[in-house]
Image 1 (cartoon, rainbow, N blue to C red):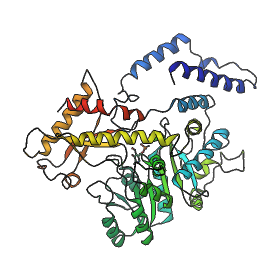
Image 2 (spheres, protein in one colour):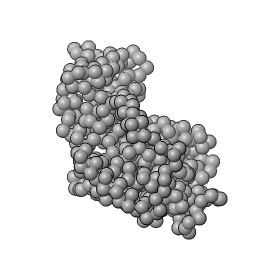
Image 3 (cartoon, rainbow, N blue to C red):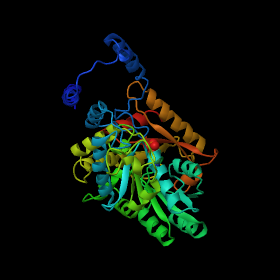
Image 4 (tube, protein in one colour):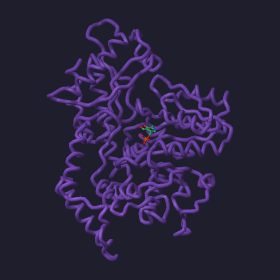
Length: 459
Ligand SMILES: Cc1ncc(COP(=O)(O)O)c(C=O)c1O
């Protein structure tokens, strides 16, 4: 959607909202709130110039961190709903947007194969969504530990500390997925109440073998939480006729006790939109609380009665709802083809890197994160320090390339992670820096050749 079309649509939406607001008697804005158009223009001018201090997150040249531009439909819907600025804490403060939230959560549940009786809601972030899932884990299995993979997001260890729950780390295999044998022995040895599996790790983008982890946890009487904050939407690809991802772990999410997914990652949403879902609606009892201030307008369930956060942007629910109207959560239309393009970009770039004599992959990508490193020219075995220096050179050189700037990220990898895959490395430093790229824009599928040529210039 070009800028002109976007502004036209916005004008129509704002007029419709103004029309609704005009039912009430017009009133004069308080003089304390007034600001001249000139002053507003000056402030915005300062702001827009300050905002230039950013990487071009919107562009396929940006393949660094997990940043995906929100879809214009989401932005329009967010801005339109913000005219009302509803609060999804309670129906008292956000009637329409609470209903929109209650319409989208079952669509996420359906994507994961959760039963219609699930309990769930949007959150401000994946961090808060995971905190809720771990808190429910603690309340469900008091006095037990929580285990997560070595590559799980650091939030799990930190939130366990916050919740006062013992946290156990399960080692990963050479590909960076949770090691099932190691988990089996941890389950036998430790008093574990909940296993956290990750569907798309933040660093390497790998998917833990949930189809093996879940039966193992069940056998040991443990619950399972899946952190699919980044990778959850790839579940749709598991349902494609020829799945471009391993379908088994994604199909297994249906059997988990809880799952987190971030619409503000792969769901085309602006920041401020995570989600948590529980298989058993009875966990709602843990949320029971008295609020002397809210829940007066309706006997219907208020979202604040089933979430830990209080105020939450109703506009986020409006934006996600509108996006799902435009792009359904389906394998072959809407979100499926968008995710498939990201995945195709990663598969193609991994193949290009592997075919080059100077580049090596950290792992074959499971989703759309590709981690790689370059080795020095010649036959001598590479040292970790030389690899790190080359990674720094690619990272800096690509960013500052005047002709073809490309923005990447870096990752610190341990000998345990790399030694089995690349025994040629001489470990003269405790770890090694590799280049990390996240190809989460569908446009990346058309940019692989340029990304590859850009990095080749800096080795
Ligand atoms: C797997 C995973 N879990 C949790 C988080 C934290 O989510 P948020 O940044 O939305 O708080 C991230 C963020 O990258 C993630 O990748």
